[in-house]
Image (cartoon, rainbow, N blue to C red; front, side):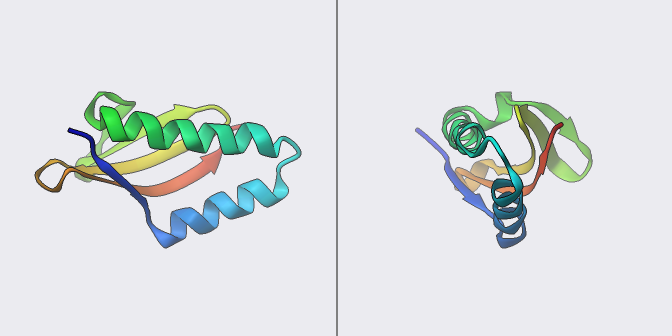
Length: 84
């Protein structure tokens, strides 16, 4: 069974800023698409654990901080940043 992946509005805004400033928009878009796919399938197996029940992962050129809510089968992307 898969998870539902949502992005907090602040993470969506961060992604939009990254995309607008990017000279490689297709690469940024593809990375975000891959994030959604892998988090839908196996979020607890992605990245590294962090305090307060969050995890981080890297899907170049993006870094992602997210939270997994297993009982609800939900993943929430909390933050996204550009890795240079």
